Image (cartoon, rainbow over all chains, first blue to last red; front, side, top):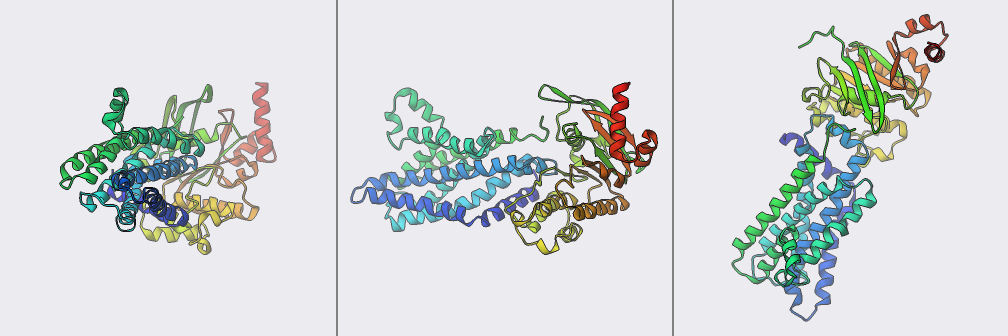
Length: 244
Length: 242
């Protein structure tokens, strides 16, 4: 990897996003609208305080997953990827550039969504609000990393979009939001143990209920980050300089 | 280092299989330095596969491809060889300048080189327009420009003139000649035979096999044909008779 090439790629991806105002607005506004809706549904009950934070972790994961998988697929189908891989650009630079650009955007998204949840929707969590942002950003990077990996298996944009329910919904069902993970049937609990979103939601739940949460949250964040690194490493294996 | 007298590209007994079909069943050729070499032949004859093998993005089944003295696809060649695919492979949602800036960064070319290339491909007035707002001809010149930044020693161009109007085609060939006079080697594919006369050397490719590797004049003299297209037909017939 070459930091100069990674940064040039991140810069280029950000320039492309800057030109696409509607996507930017959707990325920032949709999580806020959904959180607002959630707070409204549970108006007058304590439920929002317990599920608000976990949802704050799920939204950036989903949004970044979809955006990244489509963006990378576009790169593959437009011929630009083949062209890039005939230049000195390394695979790590390509993936790192995307992860960096979307990661930066995730920071903005997480800051806005967390601020909105706390100040507008009145989300009350025991742990520090700054940790909410950290967990949300790591979740977004996980979404980016998984999206990069999955896009290698999609031939068309229709398929890429279908990977969202295929990859994301099962994780959502098993992550402990609907039924606590230790209340799941044993087999499903074991499955949920190897899904990254489970740890993302665990971290958020810990933040919801514990004042001194840094230790447990740190461990969960490290696990989510390890999944993200693993997905990027697997993704780089799917990029080939030579093709049939 | 090799001397400048050695060929820019040497292909020796290259076999390429795509799917169940042997697209290139053992082809050998060389491309001299500082010349414009035309790779001509009908569609589906293996031109793109041959170019991809020279750039080093094609999985090959056998043989060797040596480019600028090194095996094709070597890391050190990645900034010395420029490749322009048939489709304009640039970012449609970026401006011309943003595209060229990015490709310049990848090959380590200075920013000033981008201004030079924008002039060379005659897109000065469109430099700050998004590529998806440009015409097809302008778009393919952006794609060409992306390969020109950093002044590669070898340019591999796949059908760069397809779909362009006659004036643009003339201008592009003038540009290719200018690049060659400065020492760049160009390998240009085309299925339009009348472009043959603009090349220093011709490679005629049909069904994965080389029908001719000659200068335009040599080709006409050998076949007695009045133009390249007739020469091509004559070669097919002699081959069929043999």
